[in-house]
Image (cartoon, rainbow, N blue to C red):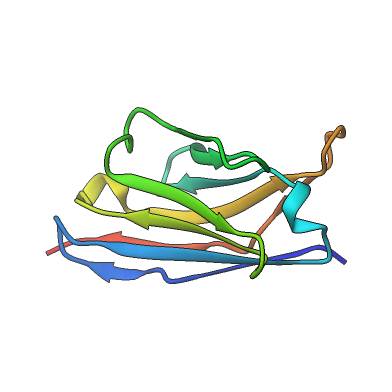
Length: 117
C-alpha cells in the first residue's frame, strides 16, 4: 500500500521559512519522481515543484528562487524548503508522485501552511 505522509506545515510570518517533509512508503522511492502541489482556499490545486528520480528539479514561476525541492532516497523522503514566504503562499500543500510509465497517481493527505502576521 502506497502512503505519502506530509509534515512540517504551520503558521509563519511573512518573510519566514518552513520546511515540509513527505515520507513515502510502499514504493521503490528512488525510481519515482516526486512533487509538491498546493491548494489555496477557493482556488484550484496548482503544481509547485517537482524532482525527478535523477534529482533534476523544476519550479512554478511563483516560487522560483524561494522554494527548494530535494530528496533523500535513503530516508524515502522528499522535502520542500520554503523561504521568503508570502501571504499568497498560504495553502494546503500536497505531496505527489506518479508510478513510472503509468498514469497512476498517489497523493498525501496535505499539510496546512499559513503565512500571516
